[in-house]
Image 1 (cartoon, rainbow, N blue to C red):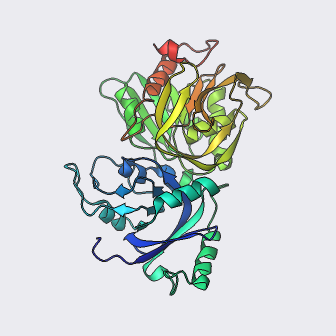
Image 2 (image 1 turned 135 degrees about the vertical axis):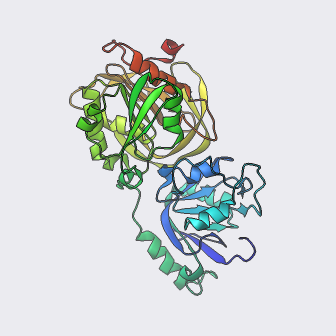
Length: 401
């Protein structure tokens, strides 16, 4: 598809513009522009529902050389709102490839732009913070815009500024499954897990099933009564897009789960929702954490894990020591921050000490990797197998070993 590229323009809401060439589908797309630092696994990134309504900038300069295949999708479709890259590969060269990346994106209607100085763009987003943006190409590019004519560009800037902001957006319902489905383990199940789909990736229930769990994946609007009717040994909340402050139903559902003393494990969006259920606030990060090379400190062991992230919000909880969960005058007892991001000291995990619940902000199931956090699925299985009512409700790393 690279033979005859047309002009394209990337427009940020602060008025900054970047000229480039059309990539994949032509037209117009709007969304929050973010950058991902991953140097591999772009197919998994593109099919991650957490990127819904986001335009993704790849910091790796050469994208598409491994093509796409039929095995690495994390969901049933590409979710990114738009795609920005510097150098588009001319051909796929992986033995696993069943098609080209650009052809796949074009077939799914994803509007992209290539030949952009992504290094300069990433530096701007790091300095100014993520913001709304638009990609315009083909018939969506007004006359004069490709030559940066001020009046034409101003029209596009106003289009971008009229797009909805990510703050306040309740998006899990737009990516969640419409009906329940079940992933069975090999052999007899050792536990039953209800996984609430807020934008779940395929590898997550697979990780649980590999450890012997039967996993019922349910829609985000599932009620507590419907969860309990499945007789779960534990409940899992997945990653997903949007502002955790807008996810009122999910927070109330999670409080019901905590009241039932059901073992709980949450990742990414699920970590933020556990924070809100416990009474802590959440806030929007300047440019978020996205990529597969984020260092996180496990405070108990002192071990640094290299982890995969995709989030723009974080939990506002005391990093040092124990605190009493603020909700309803300490209804859920003591909580500690279990993991901290080493780049900016952001909360990367929570552990409840008086109810069986824990969470991490990163993606322990990460594909194509890293796999440093996969042991957390073992921790969840151990939590479900542990006697109820222990003083420290959530097993620690030392208890796992």
